[in-house]
Length: 294
Ligand SMILES: [Mg+2]
Image 1 (cartoon, rainbow, N blue to C red):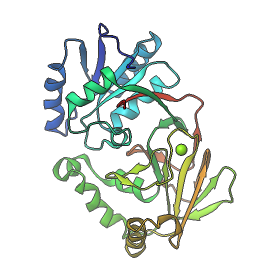
Image 2: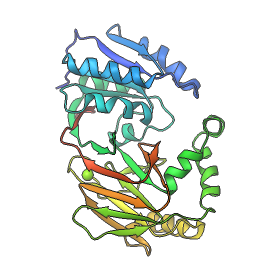
Image 3: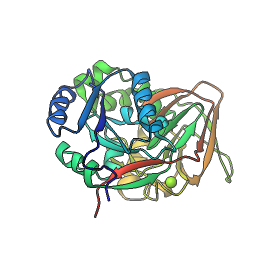
Image 4: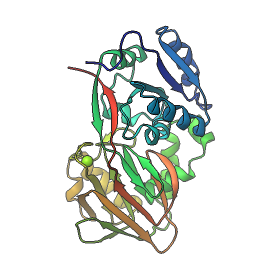
């Protein structure tokens, strides 16, 4: 059964992304959907966190977020461990978590139906240094690409903006990082990709064995980031052989530490999140999310 009683107001935080027309249209569409929707528009992340925390602390059954993975990431720390379930309107550029949950991405009306009639599922949350994530993280290559892709470029080229940066970053000299996954031998490489969910980047099912409720992270350590090797990894991936490819190590662990001699960038849920050293760890508190029922 859905958690929303027919009389409840449903707070919806909308992050009106300055970068997309889609975000502006979404506000009007969502507001018109039901008189029970209480739309709160704010691009201020501190305020987003505060609103989510207030809803969680007052025992609200649902908080919905309209935005992309960055907006979702902003509310999860406030909702962690509470009874409040997260509903999602995937209106961002990247909506990986919504895809992971198999929400009807092309229909905001369909997403509202999930909020009203869907079921609640608990998913794992992971902490890192002093932050939190729910879908993916990375140290090295992908974090560098995110760090170097300006919002002007994102606005102009969308997802291809990242690809353009990727071409220049894969030409740069690779850092060396050391990865210490809990319960495994240390690993070394040029970059590491970390999954709670299975989907990564523009919705690749990169982490084939991922379950976001088993308390473990999927960890892929890559030995090189040269264009030739990255192409080779991608080829192995398309053949379903990524974990066995030469220069790729795959382990599962509840936590890991990443160190390097130089500062190497970190990303979580597709957002730049500082530099090494970094420690990722399972959190005791999970996140309740609303997903389609059977
Ligand atoms: Mg897992």
